[in-house]
Image (cartoon, rainbow, N blue to C red):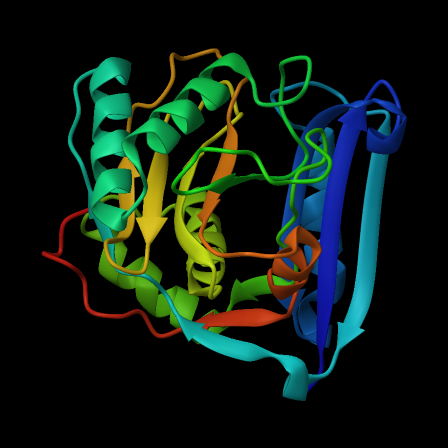
Length: 265
């Protein structure tokens, strides 16, 4: 069957291209029978986000041939228990080091997300692309960053994942969406690791992800009420950021999950 890529982005103060503040975004890859409900759900997300009421919402729907869709197994999920934001940041740096990121680059990435990674502070529309060895930022537009599009869970795989994770208390839609994105990003040939925490003022958790360590949840990475957050993709050996971004926009469905590392989450 064919699929439909549904993408949403919302901003306040005008369109993103005109300097508007990023409010919300979302990505789905669904069958025709889910298309209408998915559009409605993403529009509702845009209009009810904690960051405020947008005055610009862009919804894009594109048909995707099933032959063009790659299937990837979800990364295994574990969790680092921390007691404070400071401990959370330290845990994030430790996991990034284990994944092969240089200490200076890991520390720089944490600092950028704390202060707001956009040029004048605040939230970027996409992700930072950072050299895993030098910490240099590689994205050509530091306000836009790099976008990851055309991804989703295969419905039966998502149901199975939720059933397995429900006994661990982590079968949340937010985690499922983040896990799908992290799986796609870390599967890219030049990705070393990813660091992320949410820009949602009411959600303080985040994660570090890499093929070597899986998806490591860290429940405290910012203070409650903070509107700052974002993503950093650590890379090694890329020659062209545009080609790297193109690889992150090829359609992907997340299928059966790999074996849990220690069944901790």
